Amino acid sequence: MVKLGRTIKLRLYPNTSQADGFLDMTQEYQRLANIVSQWVFDHDFPLSWLKINNHLYKNIRQESSLNSQMVQSVFRTVVARYKTIQKQMKQHPAHYKTTDNKWIQVPRDLTWLAKPISFHRPQADLVRQSNYSFVNGMTQISITTLGKRTKLAFSNKGFEDYFQADWKLGTAKLVHNQGKWFLHISITKDVADFDSKKGPNIVGIDRGLRFLATAYDHQGKTTFFDGKKILLRRKKFLENRRHLQSKGTKSAKKKLKQLAQRENRWMTDVNHRLAKTLVAAYGTHTLFVLENLTNVTFNTDDLPKSLRDSHHSWAFFQLELFLTYKAQAVQSTVVKVSPAYTSQRCPRCGLIEKTNRHHDTHEYWCIQYQYRCNDDRLGAMNIEILGKDWLNGVKRPKIQTLRLLGKPGS
Ligand SMILES: [Zn+2]
Image (spheres, rainbow, N blue to C red):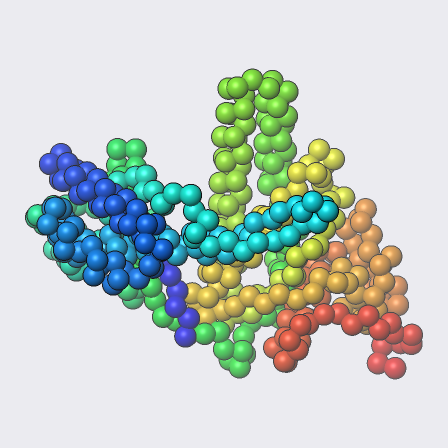
């Protein structure tokens, strides 16, 4: 079983007095969170909400108008935030240069914090049933504010699918953003694992620039996902960037930052849609085979000169992440294989020959076997073959470099 986790975002429509109630509650929650954070900081970071509860609950309940569940929710929220920071600090040790010019690494823990973690925004974490629930046939939501429960309308636009299916609703975060109120609910669902014995579809996916992705499946069907529009759009982004950089003014710098954010959001959206399309096309029980692109430099010969240096390799990793995430939900999976020789091996005779690939015509041409093939398709074919190896028990599938001297099969 895999536990899937998502967050759905509901827009809330409170009337004026409900909105005032939300504001009062989230400000009080924030105030308490900062008090608790200070206490945790002053007491050697006891990261157990029960411990904090034992020390602080009584006093806080006497002076605060938050109900008991909400006070405990504050403790959990503060502990969770410290744990997140603790993890981040562990992952990023400090580096020093010693007097004899050597770098040393020093692990970091919470004692490295100079001040308590601060909760900058009004917020509130609501526990299902005690602090929020759906009422009137799921058409309204009921939320506890200071002292009383209140019902209001909401919209789940964009999250309808999650809303009705068998997802379990968990803790919700009440969020105030640009004058609007939202409820972010974390939801979970248990789904069966990918089962390699169920005769899965096998799809080799070659990621690239001219084609965002080329997919080749075990039935021999190839699907190309064109990347030309993406390249054009990125070229536009680059031109705008150059233009703003040449200005060098303060307002140009601000615009540059906005432009970068816009480009990232757009690329993220492209990847989301591509992952969604792939998963929808091949469905459940599919083995998606990708190349492991860590430490790989991309061949950018196909790119316009202006774009070669600005190639976004993060976009490839993001696609991998999204695909993994969406595949899991339908009992499919992603496996990564070695990228070595995937664009050089003839899938018919197995011969590895670099010069068989003709970059100018985007063709692979094996003289021995009189085999011609589009070079992106060839990559996807070889990747698909490695996927079969994985299904047959090879842990780290890669193309073997032995060179055949005679005819195939000899
Ligand atoms: Zn061949």
